[in-house]
Image 1 (cartoon, rainbow, N blue to C red):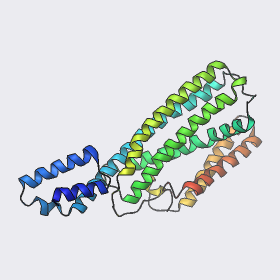
Image 2: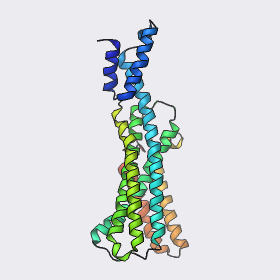
Image 3: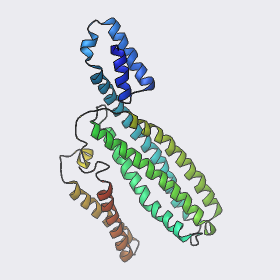
Image 4: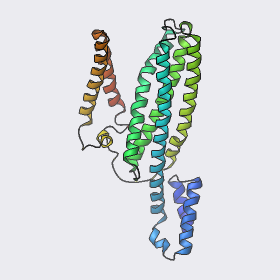
Length: 279
């Protein structure tokens, strides 16, 4: 087996296929033909294949995070527009199936928050590691954040469409029609953004190094992620409560603020390790 044959096999084993592998093999072949000592300088096919996979994996993961964030931004616009226009579509009161209506409402509250947090964290990590080769553990975290954000965005659009369907008897027809069309369009956009995100799963470099945590995202020295999560949850709860105080309903706002803070901290406990917020 020639050097190029071994390199081709190793590239495939690391998930480098298609046009990228052909380009790499063509460049290496050109060097081998023109430089007598090229093979010694390159090193073993396993090593060079891993280096190419590490560079390619970092690049495609950063690009996928940026594409996902752009799609989520468009989805957020649809979500915000639906809620703003809902004020002109008559207050929803009657539902076709109470259980499905409650499920849609719950998903419309939880899923967009998960999408926003995961998508923002993916973009921040991608920007902070711009132009660098990421360790395998960190690359895994970036992939997870991107895919969780896209999945949560898709759930949000599905919940919005379900909400429009369940409360259609008491909503203006123009609102439900607009919501169906805009939610479907956003879902198609999210599906398109999933393509580069799923491609990152095929590239499998082996690079030593830690995945980092939320302090690496913020650019600070290491601290206690749990303590930061408690402060963030308290800040979110306080913001919800203060908004209610301004609106003249402090008791109801206190309940909502407590629930929001609890949900925020519970989300960190449930997804913190998976999304690389804590070790």
